[in-house]
Image (cartoon, rainbow, N blue to C red; front, side, top):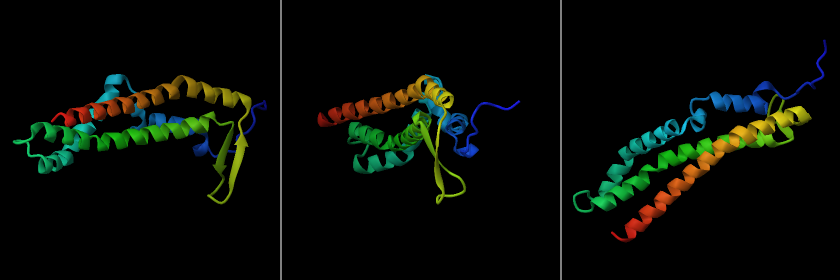
Amino acid sequence: MPSSAPVCPVPTEQQPINEYQELKESWFFRWATLKLQDYVKPIIALWIISWLVAGPVSATSFPISKHPAQFFLLGAFGAMALPLLALLRLYLGWVYVRDRLSNATIFYEESGWYDGQEWTKPEEVLQRDHLIVNYQLKAWLKRLKLTFGAIAALFVLGGGLWIFL
């Protein structure tokens, strides 16, 4: 019995739904999809690990025995570099997939960079992709944006404390 669904010419690994599934199953990108407490744990772990570099740098600038508050604030700021880079990578990866799912046309390469093509999604594929974007990706991206906002607020708070030291 022949199928009425149009054949998708996009290679399997370049189909937005498969890119979405791949990210969702990836150990790194799955991080954005976890429960709140499981989402926050890697951020804190990366921040603590980053202290291995930020702590000595901060101690060189502000010896802990003479300037403990400045040492801690500078170290805390510096230690946020690794978590921020990881969160940025998460955000950019999910935004890329969101855009591919949202677009009505998909750019793909058949065998290499020199033979790019575009495929227009049929309405049922477009609706399915929009459901994924609206009911999953938007929530994960919102969480990432809120995380960036919280980190920015901590930087502003720390900067305000720095002024009074």
